[in-house]
Length: 147
Ligand SMILES: [Fe+2]
Ligand SMILES: [Fe+2]
Image 1 (cartoon, rainbow, N blue to C red):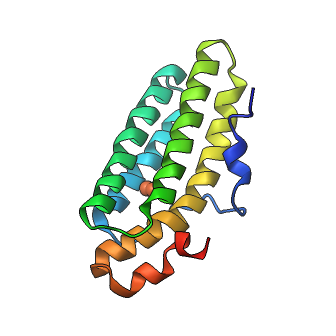
Image 2 (cartoon, rainbow, N blue to C red):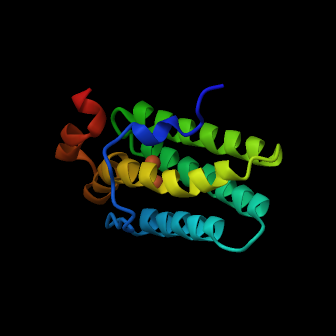
C-alpha cells in the first residue's frame, strides 16, 4: 500500500512556527488546526484526537473552498486537491490506528505540521491576500499560475 505520509515530501522543509496570514477568520481556523495538533501530541485519547483533527480539517478545508467559490478565486482546483490529499492521509492514518498501528500517529503528528506550513505559506497565503485585497493583481501571484 502507498505510504500515507508521501505528502510530506512534496514541499520544501518548513518551520513549525505558527503562521499568521492577516485574514482574521482564516487565522482563527489555523489556530484551531494548531490546537488539534497539540492535542494529538498530548495525553488525550488518540482516537478521539484523530477524530477531532479529521472533523476540524473537513470544516477548515470546506470553509476555504467556500471562500474560493464565493469570490471566484482563480485556479482554486489545485488548492482543493491539496486539501483532498491531506484528508485522504488523515483517513488512512485513522484506519491504521484503529488496526493497531500506533506509530503512524506519531508520524502524522510530526509530518502533518510540515505539510501544513508549506500549504499555508503558498496556497492559503495566496487566498488570504486575495480575500484581503478583493482580488485583482494578487491573482497573478497565485501558486497555481506558475505550474
Ligand atoms: Fe488553511
Ligand atoms: Fe488550504
